[in-house]
Length: 283
Ligand code: GLU
Image (cartoon, rainbow, N blue to C red; front, side, top):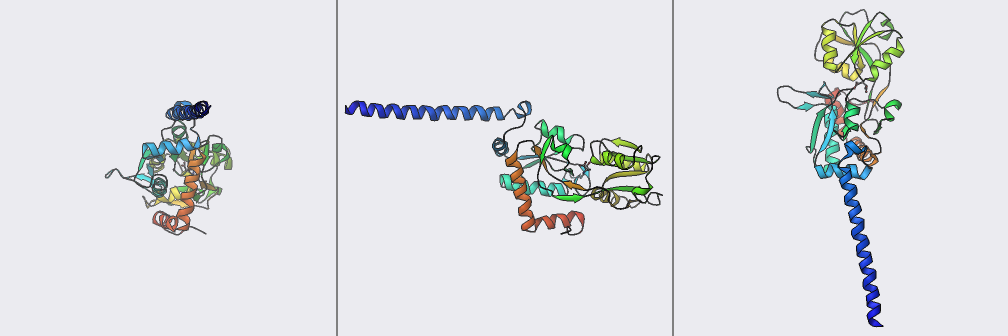
C-alpha cells in the first residue's frame, strides 16, 4: 500500500519532469528558428531582443553621407551625427554599453529592404514616419521634427516653393518622401533622382538642376558645407522622424521609446539636439 503510493508520486514527478524537458526542447527549437529570421520573416518581439543580447551588439542602419545626422569622416572612418548619438543611447539601454553597436550604411532607398532582410536591427536615418511605410515596418515615437525645403545656389531666382514650376529641374534622393511630395505640390515638375544625398548635392553643384529638395535639417547641413548654397522659403511638409524596426518587434519599439523618453527627461535629448542642430529644440 505504502509502496504503491510512493510509486504513484514518483510517476507524477517523472511525468512532470518529462513535461519540463519537452517544454525546454520546444523553446530551443524556437530559439534556433529565430536565428534564421532573414529567411523566416520577422522574429517575434522577445526573440528580437534576445537575439540582440546574444549577439552582444546592436546593428543600426544610419546614413553615411548626411551631415548633422549621419556622416562618415573619410579620414578617421568615424560616423557621427544626431542619429548616431541616439543609436548609442539605445545600445546603452538594451545592452548596457553605448559602444556595443555596429553601424551599417543605409540610403533612403536601401533602409527598409536592409531592415526587413535582417541585416540591421533598426533604422535611425532621417526617416519620416508615413502611413505607407507603416505597412512595411513599425516605428518608434517621433524623435525629430523636420520639414521639406529647397536648397539653391545663392542668387537663384528660386526663393521658395512658389517659384518652382513645371520647368524647374529638381534634384533628390531615391526612396525619399521628398520626391513624392514635390511631385504632388508641383504636378509635372522634372525630378532627377540620385542614389544618395552626396550625389544629389554634387549634381546641384555641377549645375544639373535648379534646386535640391529634402528635409530642411539635411539641407542646412549641406549649406554649412558650402557657403555658395542656401536654404530658401518655408518648409512645406511635416517630416516627423521615427526609428524603424521589423514589423511585430514590439519589445524593440518599447526599448527605443523608453530610451527616447529617458533622454528627454534627463536632458540628454536637448544636449544632443543642441550639439548638432545648433539650437535647443522647440518646446
Ligand atoms: N525624411 C525624408 C524621408 O524619410 C527625407 C530624408 C531621407 O531621404 O532620408 O524620406
